[in-house]
Length: 169
Image (cartoon, rainbow, N blue to C red; front, side, top):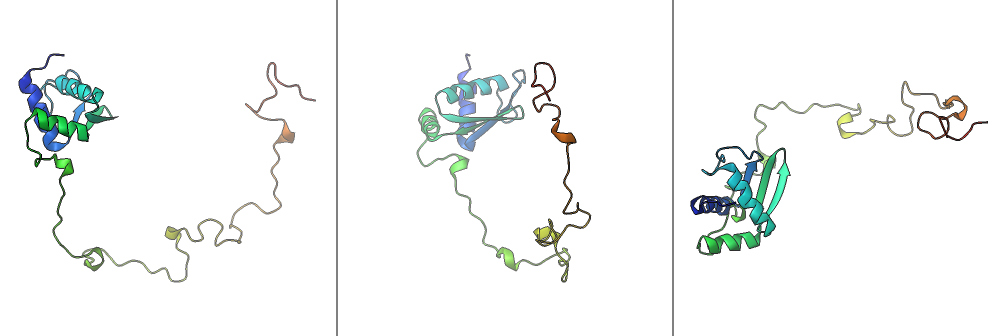
């Protein structure tokens, strides 16, 4: 597909700046939401990049997602004549403002946790099944209960019966 150089450079600049690019799988969309280029041209450019292994493609819920590879970064840096100090946003280190550790934070509007005393807490899965290992479950089947399935006749899909199946005696 022939794509104007102006559109190609605009897509390449955005891809290099962000490091990632997405597009809805709608070939008739007049304009890509992030770049002022028709959506079809964005998809076709990234399809070309994918075939040259310059991006990695993911597809989910009618959207394409492309991530630059190291080879793609080098290619775009050369194509756009950028210095090696400029890197995509996905490779930049983010700095966090120094703050208090999580354990020292005030509770705020949150009420204190409930004290269960000596009752079992099911949130920890302690005693949820079997009421504390070894005990019988209340309301369960008695120990001598042995279900019988009609003399071993077999049921639907258990082989035997029907046309051409094994005969019963």
